[in-house]
Length: 326
Image (cartoon, rainbow, N blue to C red; front, side):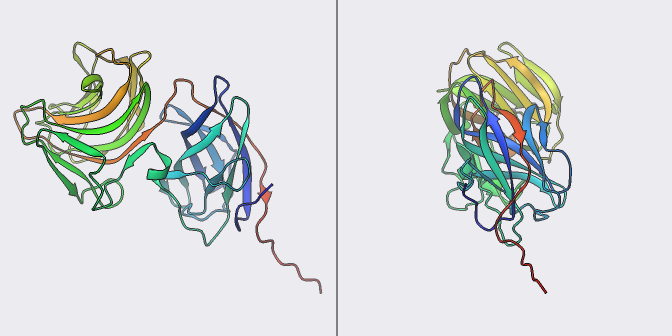
């Protein structure tokens, strides 16, 4: 069995999906700096792996690596967030998860390692607006909203700033292609400028709307059930909110978590669409709506997700300590 680089430690763990194997599937993993019992932890409705490094990793988690079962092929991951010397949440793209227990390894213990977190390599589609040249390449406009790369950001140093200059024109939209797929999970952050406006955050099949979530013009989050908007919570202005949506076109249902709090639980959506082709955001108000979007992630989603299995004992490798006999 190969050993990856000069890392000191690794632990094996397993994943499986008895109802059918999957490739390049993204799942969360929460890594703790200190000591505890390895297993699983529910993060916003998703079963995530839970691993403790026993204070043997870097305090900033830069040396964490995940490999496939051969012990050497490093998998892509994206660091969503961390608290140094406490914990970090990673999204890992697992290359292949079989119907029976499929082995992977987590490596840690390399003081000279740098982070290899990469959203663009981990997700199906990803945009963090950090590249001043390509930040707008994945988006198209219908109509003529004002779109700027802006220094107000949740992650990094930039986000997308949107002013709907034609707020009474429902044909003015900003579009991000993400299909066609029948199941979809997205993760992004949104921030509203004022509560006198309405911001639509929806998914369509070539322009026919399916799941539709909004920040209303009276500070409420809402979803559209096919005939009316339903209030499901409140928001405040000038604050970024994490929005995660799980969409299942086979059942015409979707679920939304706002800042990891369940906001829409498997609710109906309109349109009877069988696939999702794009995400669309636009304003509709007598004012000129202003909002920001940051760190847009598109990933796989299946109603029956892969299951975490067992965690093995720590294994030692890499450079061994020197021993002197006197």
